[in-house]
Amino acid sequence: MPRKASGEPKVKTVERTQANGDIYVYEVTTLYNPKKRYNEHISSRLLGKKSSDGKEIIPTRPKRSSKSVAVTAVRKTVGAMDILEWIGRESGIDDDLLSSADTGTAQKIISIARFWMANPDKTIRRIEEWQISHVLPYSEGLSEDICYALMKMLGQDISISQSYFRRRASHAVSRASVAVDSTTVSSYSEFLNDVRFGYNKDNNGLASVKLLTLFCLNDHQPVAFMRQPGNIPDVISVLNAIKQLSVLGMDKPLLVLDGGFFSEANILAFIHSHTKFLMRGQLDGKWISPELESVSPDIRRPSNAYPADPGLYCVTRRISHLFSYERKRTRGGIEKGAIITKEHRLYLHFVLDTDKERIGTAVLMKKIQNVRQQLLNGVEQSLMSKAEQRIAELFLIIRDANGQLSVTLNDRAIIKETRYYGYFVLISNEKMDPFSALREYRLREKTEEGFRLDKQHNDAHVTRSKSTGTLEGRFFCQFVAYGYEAFFQKKLRELKNTLAVPTGDPSHDKSDTFKKEKALLNWLNNMSVAKLFDWFDAVQETTVNSNIGKARWRAEAVERDRLFLTRLGVLKG
Image 1 (cartoon, rainbow, N blue to C red):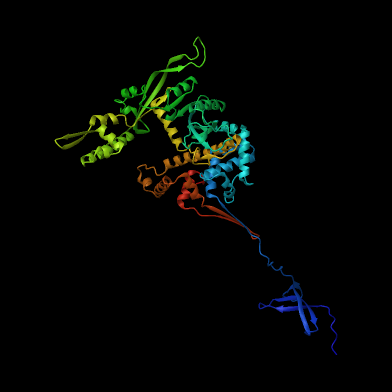
Image 2: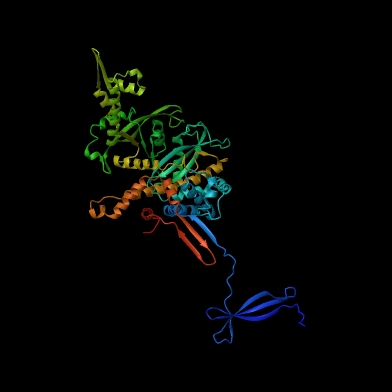
């Protein structure tokens, strides 16, 4: 009779021989099932394998876990950010900010400036999404509320901005030339004290606030800005800005102004404030036109050619001009309200641009010939546009003799009209040669390309700030972004001037390097700053972390892109 099952599991050792001859030893647990009448397998555990002599069991390594390995992967856009980091470092902007504020505040300002530099057409509310794929100095992350709080703090505590202005101004020489850009920023707000109705350069019917940016021409960098009510005249705003420059350590700079500041009243205001200036004047002025007539016959002398551009001719006339003004207060026996006439010395720098002279004359002659041909074809003058009728009256001689129409050019009128084409005049109260005056003013003209802070860029078209403090802080962040852009524009110009410059040596001018530089120059001439950042924004870096290890790789750049970054200085050669 069979023995009754105990109901307890039984453990036994089982040996299994592998195909290669190795013998593995398992501990097998079984349990008898009375209904099925056989032992069921409960579990098995590998003890090891037998040694070659079969006397001992050698433990084996534990089986690899079947659980999936945790993997973290991050992809960041690094191409454009590398350029921005280089700009901040090489321009000194980042160091000056870190020296002017605590680390967290400085990193926030730098992050906002880099966002606007790379995204000139986006509002600050987009920064929260953008920073997910772009590494910014402020690693804790920026939101719209954080940016708003930062701008409010910067507006309430202007010591940070003033300290930054002073550090930027310290890089310039004491007798620096300073360009002044005056612009208006429109606003819908009814709660900002500075927002007033005055001259709005957008002509959109909105109240505005005036923003003056002071730009050092020696190093092509903005050094300071001032916010003033929108109804304050430009000349008063500039004179107030001069006081700020003295605080920043720039002693009596030369103000370089555009033609919008030209008027006798403004010139007299600068003279009374002992401010040195250089501004563009108007040739049709009653006291300028006679001087132009006296210099025009001899201005084309070879000695008057501008060395840097032989197509320009320059000559200077020193004059003494009588200014009349009303006395504002009683002093020295002169009553308030009395009209004072005083003579002041000025310098008129006349410049002839022969290229503009030639082009302007050619354009006028084309219009005249077009009108003449219409008349010969039988077109009535009354059917022409007002501009064409004026050309016919001034520059054509029309005769009708016995039904035969004759239309000839009025040579004397055309010569009189075009005799001053290509001329312009610069006015200064500081003695300088005409070549120096032209050089200073042309530096200002180059900065015109960079004066983009005011309207379409850096979220500055129409301000949405609700308080004066926030408005001031917003302007400061935009000012830092403008510094980034001005530095980058300067470096781009310098790079273009060094690319594909022929020397006359065939080994240089026909080399592969010269061809690559020429291709790079053609590419850069067709790229704006915004397009450049969009282009390099495609360069991404992927980082993968796992239990196996860490890997990092970047998207490849074409040879032209590497040449650009190397010559610019972003990559080391």
